[in-house]
Amino acid sequence: MSREVEALDIANEAGHILLENGAEISRVEEVMDRISSHYGVDAKHFFVLSNGIFTTGQGYANVEHIPIHGCQLDRVVEVNQLSRDIEKHNLTLEQASRRLEKIRQMPNHPAWEQILASALGSGAFCAIFGGSLLDCVISTLCGIILWIYVLWVSAPYLSKVIGNITGGMLVSLMCIISHHLIPSAHLGNMVIGAIIPLIPGISFTNGIRDLAAEDYLAGMTRLADALMVFFCMAIGVCTIFIIDSYIFGSMIQLHGMLTDPLTANWLIQIEVAYLGTVSFAVLFGVPRRFYHGAGICGTLGWIVYLVFTRLLGTSGIEAMFFATMIVVLSSYQCASTLHCPVIIFIA
Image (spheres, rainbow, N blue to C red):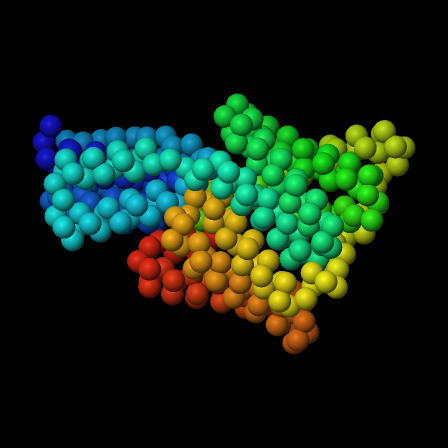
């Protein structure tokens, strides 16, 4: 095998790992180009889609289909660092290949850590959206059961469509049973908090970023994937509500999300914003050393949102716009300071 072909194989493998673990299209192309250029491959072309990579070079052609599934951002960080180490330390092709194999075999975060993150994230977001302490406790328990289901039933045995429908059904069933047993619990707050771990944050964020980078095909594909997840979750929730209405003779009346004065306190809102963001960092596979930075970015955004809605009296749209700007700016600052991909913080 010639040096050029081996270099393109390594670049293609790096792109594969990045794409299947949640990297944006521009980063995949940048890393592949950086690796191949360092090893002296000038005549090469990479065409990266959201679910495939086309690589051509002198005497080389490769097409790979890469299904859209979950994300492990720690692998994105490691491949990105590898591409820079190749330039900085002049790694041989064999060394680079061994590093890539180690990255591919990296284990996910332990099951207990993911379950804990799902639990704390569910409870935290229930509080963010105004749930009472009782609502938060129930959402936390639902988050535990949901992620146990995801890890040992949905992910290994079910398709994404069926997995998200049944996940939505499971969450709704637990919350409705809790509401029937404890009528003072607010059903709307519990459901929105408990279902949060299923939200496809990486696909949605990367879809927006790809559209902003004028990569419309990849952007629309990823947004369609995210919207399909939302649709499946909604089907699951509605199914359980309809079944409950048949059993009890009437549909449960939801009154929106009610705001509890205790959890609406500024200090609690700031704390749960940090906790909820860190919880998502765990579920997205972010390296542990970046948890705090991710939490800070999310908390800053929520503080700005609260300032605009509570103190300045602006609409939710204006508040969300300025809060998002703060999240983006702080994310880029953290990424620049810590030398890692910005998706680690911005998602």
